[in-house]
Image 1: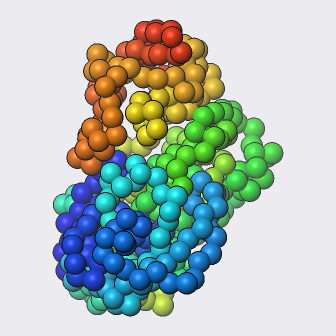
Image 2: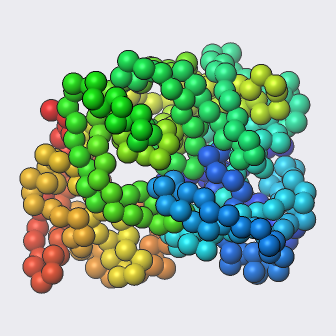
Amino acid sequence: DTIPFELKNNLIIVKAKINNQNEYSFILDTGAPTIVWEKVALELGLEKTNVSHVSSDGNGQEQKIEFFKSKSISTGKMIMNDMNLVSLRGMSKELSCYANGGILGGNFLMNYNLQIDFVNKRIIACTDFEKLKIPEEAIRTEAMFSMPQGQILIDDIQFLNRKDYFIMDTGFTGEFELASDLGEANLKRYEGEVILKKGLSSLSTGGRIEKEAKYIKTKLITPFDTIDNVILSMNAPRSKIGNKYLSQFETITIHYTSKEKAVYFGKKQTTPFSDLSFGFGHYYDEVENKFKIKDIYSNSGAQKAGLQVGDVILSVNNTDLSDINFEKYCISISEGKDFFMGSDNNDISLMIQRGREIMSVTLQKSPLFK
């Protein structure tokens, strides 16, 4: 089957049905189990099981997860019957802006062979791998799949004079992250520059947490690519490769059903990464209905300009954000838009509020690592 998808904020969004009822949008996530938002489970009248356990999300936060029974879950002709769906009560509302149904995870996807076609925005799925057309230039990479979640583990990735495996995670919108234990172990041997990023974590199913992360600029050598100028976080719960990088390939083909698990990486579309940055991140505060500074890199233009985590962003390049609310924000990002119009430019003008003080700040992109 051929299943269309949308790419929003580096998330792959597909349409799916539970029990062949109403159609919802789901995040296609090779790094997670299949999840249904509790609101949807209640709308569909799904029966809750009496099984629950505690698990960790992408930020390492512990969450109590429960399960709902489903007769079937399907996207296109891909279908799995009698599947228990994870339910998360602590799920951040922001994720539901991208997908109002839940997450289509590895334990569903691993029953098929898949080709993610980023050029034509489609998933090609079949049980017979021989029917998938793999591009001639595609590079075959052996992989391991964790059970029962179906995570894809790519081994033999070289960094800082060692090798390890990374999870291929289409639900992670960034580039690369390195597990905390690997980061600390290598930091002692690494003589390069280290910078800090202080503030809030990236969004995960449990929301955001206060976080201080160490970053380095390095080179990654994978079985399918050599990537320069990688800004590698050293404080993640586990090492992973995210969609900001994966979406650079024209196609990624996953041979789930073979004993010899493999992933085929097609032609690259874009140029290597740059470490040019304004030096800050932004986020939407659901409680206060405001855009705020999420985090700041040390020695960056943002830090030198005096920006602080929690500062309210009133406008960006004369685009007024003071009347933002969750509904407007949710509609915007669900359409794949960014309130930060012009943020791809080399300079940016901000109107900032801190308490009763309002200030104007102009920043220029500059290398994070000097």
